[in-house]
Image 1 (cartoon, rainbow, N blue to C red):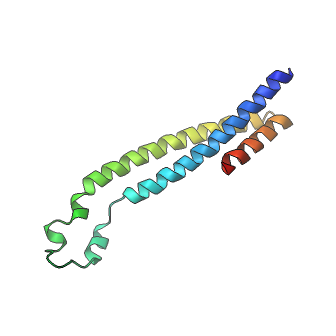
Image 2: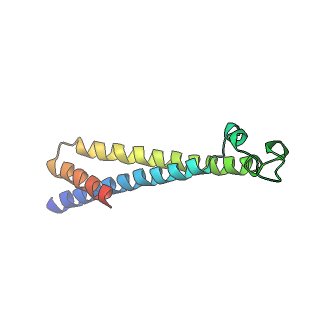
Image 3: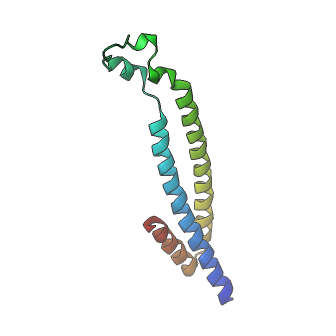
Amino acid sequence: SPAGMALSVLVILLLSVLYEAVKMGKAVLLRRALLALPRSLSQEALTEPEEGDAGPTQGSSSLMAFPISFRRWFWYHVGQTLFHVVQVVLAYMVMLAVMSYNAWIFLGAVVGSTLGYFV
């Protein structure tokens, strides 16, 4: 029926928009995760101690914060993994719909992907 086809195209369009939104969310989460990584010990050794500092051996703030930063990075990584699973599931759903070889469904997927990327 025409209403069923219109609903199918709308659902595929929304799935494609959601796929693009998840892809962007995953990129934002990756950036945050990279910012949460602690400085490496080699970088710590390269920095010059300021006046009054005893050096990195007596405990710099970067070395003391390592467990907290690692925990935060770990949770960002868990979030990225969940985003990835959702992204793959959405991609397969859209692919299966397109593989029905229906031109309207295909156009719904293309328009949805375009709108999702634009927004």
